[in-house]
Image (cartoon, rainbow, N blue to C red):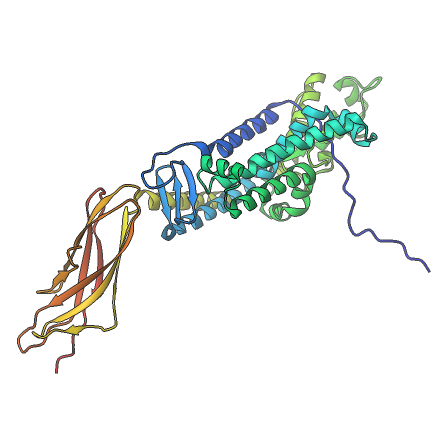
Length: 472
């Protein structure tokens, strides 16, 4: 007895998005252009630094410094990264609750690069019908030339994407020269190749499959929606009427004629489906594949303008609005996200703006805990660590207080000049004279580390124990 073969995976159906003009397409193009200017040109922006490459944004892993214009982030500031990630997560929840997947439609890297690849494909191969004919046609000279030109341009974009990403970790001009001369580190070649390959595959070959099958956001974003979330929707009552949608034809050319026949405003042209980059029909309702790019709105508005009918058959709206109820954007969930987002952003900005230009720590050397001198005095030894966080030199002074009669001996290093971003370890000896009876008193001593020149900041105070033998 034979069994029917079960298909576990659906074969990919090629999508040939049609170009469209409109306000949302212009918005997407503007955001894409701005994103590319920032991404590709930022590594080449110069910023004068005396002790590091003159690059405005540089993530120097060997030196364990991140440079972002005038801000220097060190390893101990890693909590700032956690703060940024928390802010981005809250912002995503906040925006998704208000306006759905606008991140996916306008700002996601997959969307931005796929848009550019589609523009290249349209420029080389032509509009949707021409690309469909080319794809289904035999491998002749025209197909080889156009496909080769498309893939070649895609590869150039992917390569420059990989080089630009790597340039954020190495001085950009130096990197390009070393890559071309074969002197770049292995990690630079690997990173560039990896980004080139993934960009070419994801934006050129996989496209909508990344959004539909690989991106987890498509699966859980509906949990952030509610009846007031602004989503791209088709107004079925207006578009379908009582007898459904119908193409333009005799007796169905004006709105009055169509309404008299019980037919809706949708002329079933399919333009909204043809422009969709993920190949869905928005008239079938909200679908998890929809990335809220709003190109179907531009397509439908173009048809409505051509017919001189009101826009808005497909638009950003809420489920409540479609059902004749009021849309409420200011609700407890939205306010809560907004308050948390504002507080987290303010806290991060305060932390960055009030950061100390230097750090200092003091640790006691416990082997031995103390040394008893021949005159009865007691000496404790400490390790002082200083870190200049600035890209400029500074002078630091070290003194002690809080322990009567104590003296500090650092072999003349009580005042030290720190070069830009210098880290240094110093040995400090604190000695107290013998008291009456030949014994020295033990308590606590406070190290005061203060900037003398090159920076303005509150002194750093580190209180540490001072050990002495127990009194009999």
